[in-house]
Length: 306
Image 1 (cartoon, one colour):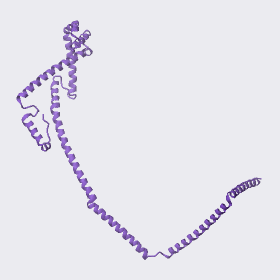
Image 2 (cartoon, rainbow, N blue to C red):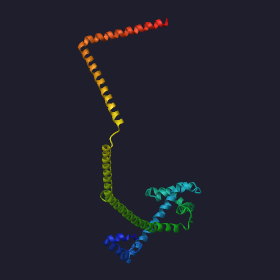
Image 3 (cartoon, rainbow, N blue to C red):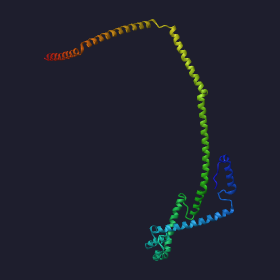
Image 4 (tube, rainbow, N blue to C red):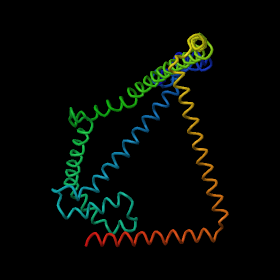
């Protein structure tokens, strides 16, 4: 079948629209088959022969597979037929050469003599498989074996016709939804760009600039008012007296610090004039005095304890 095409695609591609119209109206049917009667009959015959050949091959494969598994699954089968079935299965599969077939002709004869028993076992196995297929086809409403073919045809119809149509429709809907999403995305981008332009160069920017200039003017006015207030309102007398007293105390403190600095400089000069030997002598005397003081304190402590 021809998949549906979005009208927008046909409008944007006139050549494809002409081709699609020619295919859908003149050359192909709604199910995708050609409108050429001769070719269609030929195709139908080929398709029919192919389907028949496929059925024959599949039936042979199913029988051969069932026959190969029969010894292990058919409990009612006599044990003496197990080896016979395996040999015949190997012959049918082409695993035994022509020369060996004459040697195994007795097994083939035994197989043919008991073919009714083997056929019954195969039928039982096929019925079991058919029952399982019925459950697989519809686990909720399991059809009977007689209705399995109709159920299979229905599933095939859905898989080959219904599902492709639904899928094609869903693809078109998805494409339309994507177009709508992209269009909305484009509008959002345009709106964002407009907002940015207004913020950077529009009325909002001008309003922000005017507000900043207004605040700057207010700050300048407050500064001028503060200077005018300082000029027209001198500080009180108590404040001036306190400043003078603080300045005088700072001067006396500075003089005392200068005197201490001069005294320290003189001491350093004396140390420099004394030289290294005198400094060592002074250090030794200081150490001796410290030891004598410590010894004296120790003796005084002993006397106090007595």
